[in-house]
Image (cartoon, rainbow, N blue to C red; front, top):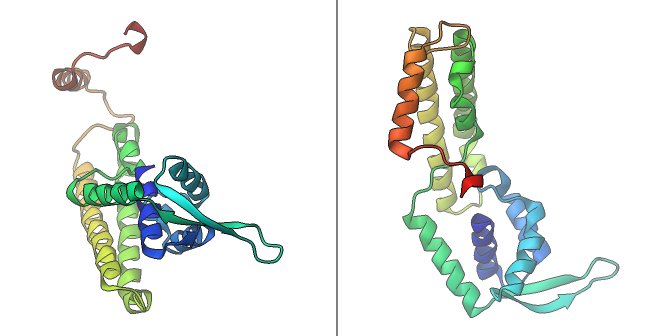
Length: 211
């Protein structure tokens, strides 16, 4: 929700007074669902909620012909303060990206060795194809866009290139025999050492029902 809030407050600050429809259209054109985890369907709900919280205020409601009525929004003083706080929070803090691949990779030993290595090689090729497509079309994609949008693409590009190299490296280590995988002899001693290490770092599991 914080990312959605930041994106909406930022756009209202930039475009105000602005219709909710125009905010949704603008964010959709940015493909925010793919890189900021902002779902277009949540935008109107967020606008209503932030209005109730006093971060936004309704300036007017307009209706053209038979089209649905559209409300114009602008920031309140509280909304401006919230926007500035969120903006600086995300500039100065680091949060690890939420990637479903990491959840799947946590269970790497459940895949056969050959499949795991093959999947990593395939993932590397997908990332490499994306970076090639970007490099081949960067001039077209950047047409009429401000420089910082290109810098944002460069960050995504650097992450993709680094992950592709990592995929190839881990695939090679798996192929060389490192780690344990599905249908291989289980390492009971190694599993118990892993459990002890986790508990030493995080403590014994707690049953919430006992609290």
